[in-house]
Length: 449
Image (cartoon, rainbow, N blue to C red; front, side):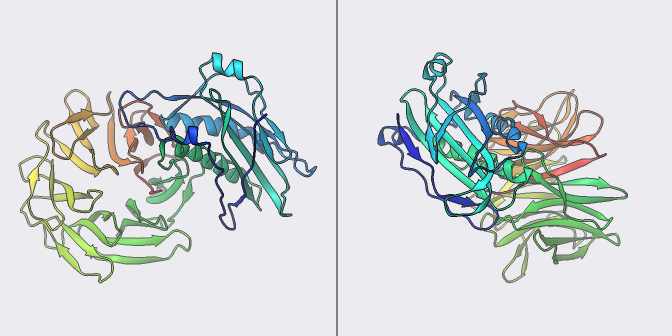
């Protein structure tokens, strides 16, 4: 029976060391799929049992029980895989080796392409370390060959780390079949009402483990991630003035990027992280400004008697989309990054605002007002030639933000009496509420990879 030795240990909490197994050439040729095609068929995957590991004779708590639900949800959200409804049959191991599922016929009869299984336990690894060990294997049901095997290790044993390992394995499978990174380990920042204030929070992309970032009782709004994911930039209201602050997540240290004024809002980083664009009313009317984060020089790039707001950079950093009411109603415009060559993109509807450029550069999502439905999410191509409504129904949908792979959006919506954060596929399917409790959750922004 085919065997492949599990790869070297990954220290999640101390250091990262990885070694990928060699993939048979016959499989490598088919590794990358055109998963962005509209006619792409999801890959049927059988998520088998992730049992309690028996490593070095150590006993294990029931931390393994959460792996399968987390993994299935990740694979479903990926839009690459479709978990099939089959029993949680255990896969086999021999010492530190994967030994594949024996019931190939059952998998083949159900049209399964990939089978994955694993074990999670507390034990000692080959190098003598004692901690949480997560073994995972994947097997091709058609060729009866192994695709991938991994061992993840952490000196700490916690539920969040088990979830992180499950997320990492899901991302490995996505990468194996598409050549692009998965998003299961990304984060979402958002604003939540706390007492008389609005505070910043960060949670996993699936809504798990919300952590409060600010706690000053003031209004902290419109967060955006730095490209390195180490800090958030946001608008802070202090003494009836608005300033733009940058907060380092690990230390909580803050610095003022834009001094207080009557209006400083919607900050967003350039793709290379060297500039920050934002809207400000320093001269009495809101215009778009760019802050050079190396020199701290500020450049005003729009100058119009109407309001210019909500800048969003194209992925190549050459253009900026923004909202302006210079035509009488809020509409989406685009200009070169130096403020030249301004042109209007939206002409359908009397309200279009809050543009956000997709990571692939092929779409701009925005808030659109639809007759009979209210404020929805729409998307259009950067030349304005194609227009698609994403959300529907009687609700107020706002603050769209793209996932790093451009397949999903996160947004806030008042559709059940309170404002919550939702995920949705870019084609409008798969709506999922990811916040719960509280009184008001809004302004989500998706982290980079």
